Length: 124
Image (cartoon, rainbow, N blue to C red; front, top):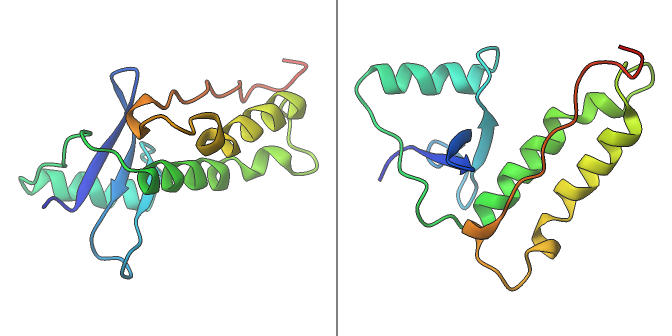
């Protein structure tokens, strides 16, 4: 079993799911961001000749892990002084939170992630 699993949306890898070297029954996802230390570790792992597991067989735990990471990564948009359109970001974050309910009765592979709003300020 691979240490990492790719998470895709519309045929494009959008995040990486770490499956090993974590506490029992847990997983963690992280974005494709060169400034992210988990992503840097993943790139080093791949450079050593390893291959991430294909996206097949996503579970609801994978979806929830990705959702939780997206929410953590976008918390800054809700802080006082953030120069983004907070109404758009609040709606986006609510859509992210609602993913499990929105797709209730469907498979995890059917989840379509909402498009992230612009990080440009509302007056840009």
